[in-house]
Length: 445
Image (spheres, helix red, strand yellow):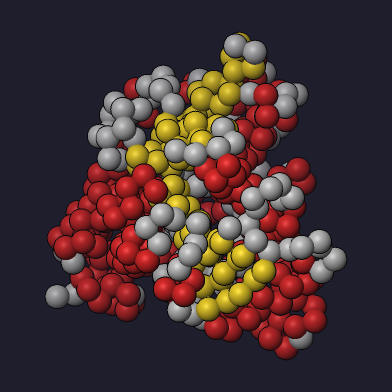
């Protein structure tokens, strides 16, 4: 089978390649095509993959191209992992928002809206081209903001585009470890939108074991989310929120911390050093990547940890979040009818009553050769409903802005976001992004 990765020069591509090397099952991926607009980044990642595959028996054949149609032709699966505007764009997202005293995180708040405004038009063009060149392919979307982008792409691809994220996987793993259970034997009742979900129960042998964790403050505060939110707040909710909800529940603290921790600037510098080092000395590409990846994981969520007053990440959380393993399990389930359950971003159908059937939600899904089907679950608690509806309205406004080149819809997306506190602030944000983002030229008419 052929897998095409769009954004193939991206920093996290070696994680996917590593998962492919570990897959020895029949019908595995035998051809990996990397597509990127930046030939230099493709070359650098190519060196990493070649060194990573050294000594492997019959690794997937890896090729690279800057031609989209060449990458798509004959693909069974397509990973969309693009970053429109690069990490430099992420820095602008943060700076413009913080200049107005609001959050600039790349998927949450004003920064997420700005990132969506420049990404959705490109993602929709890619989706249309996939439908024309590789209509039987399944698209697995990694591109952030993942739920919004997946929903936009579904207008051309329907249920053949699936969004994945490693946040629910990491949360489930940490909760299972704290409870002393094997995550493979548990059912995690998780629901919401991407980066806006809650773990409401954990079933083992038909019994919900999450109340045992919620009743133990020391155990609650022994893992990342417990330290971020505090045991009292988690017990008040009766659920474990996705780590990104820290931005909503502790907004002032998060904005204050973000002023001293620019995640975009940190990653820009980390990756600049990596790509430059590989250009100078390709023979050490893999060690250079491993070093940069470790630094990336250590600094992940630094601003949230500062806002919560907690220290460095636990060593158990420095392993990859697991999105590449989710992707591999998803591909095998579809290609070989290996039935499994995964938390995915898919069209809602009738799963959550607070949004319509076409809305992309993040929920447990049964996956087999027919693709993913969301599982009927308990409805969202009252405290979550308005937040989910509000953020979904913002996502829809971004898609409307992209489809119709509408500055009014872009302003609406910013002004209606729960983390933007004034229409006048939204106007200034939009003006700032339009001045600094060439990718938003389509909104300047």
